[in-house]
Image (cartoon, rainbow, N blue to C red):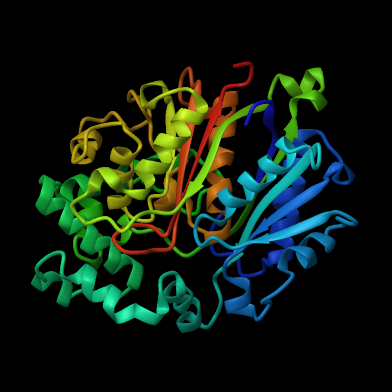
Length: 410
């Protein structure tokens, strides 16, 4: 990723937006990124459009990006549609970076958009049922269920969710293997809900205590509602440029892309935590960037649940395997700690419009590394990392994307 920079970022507010459409969210996010980059729409030479749900929810199975981007005036450029489950937006960013690095275009756009909230809730939630091998769905579930004994609390849960069940099985397995506690999961959720108070684009902006998180409705034990990402609408975008084209003014704010890695996992055994997909891809990204976990100033991780954040801090090398619970308990991952994680509020509080999530993480890293995030600013931020997972396969995500960015001028 030598000489590749993010020159502009944009993001809509995340949340339930009844009047929003894929087209309107696309225009908001892209227009904000263009304004941030001080570039006209006509400078875009290629566009990569991430979306997962419009085909399932609205019947727009094909040419989603072409339709959404032409509605806002983009013409006569290559548009590629990207579907990679929850990692779609990070995948779009990698494709944009690669196109600039290969000399195919000097300026490329990556945009992710999702309009998830619809009146038909059964249809809305059925989207998640397609994010693993549907030909072996029952076998997949039974394999995960076999990881741990079934506590009575799971059977009595008053709300069901396939992916929350998956995370609950993995969380309980981690708890049995390493002694991770439900209280530590609640600390993650309370931290992230507190972080989002100062994020004006966040879906939720109300601080929560550990006690409030634990007392909330059980979704799938040990996960309570505030520990789980909500359904959201929203969009995010980034504009990628080669260093040769940066003006002196742009160079002051352009964020270098040090690594942008994507990969799938192996047929590992559940107890082989050191072979977790995200750990393997993160190590590859660190090698490409020429830095290590000890150099990272802040992280945005895919906390679809509080447990996911604990596991990903381990996978990214911020602590030993099994040390994610004690890490959050120490205060290290909160704003003001040695390595803030999800200063945006994360998926749990900022929101999780699937096809936009990866670029929303990048939006947070870019603005943090520029020193533009106000009360939630991480002091002396030099290097940021984003971990974005998608779908599910075996005992882990089906795909992982790791992005490493640096402070302007580095």
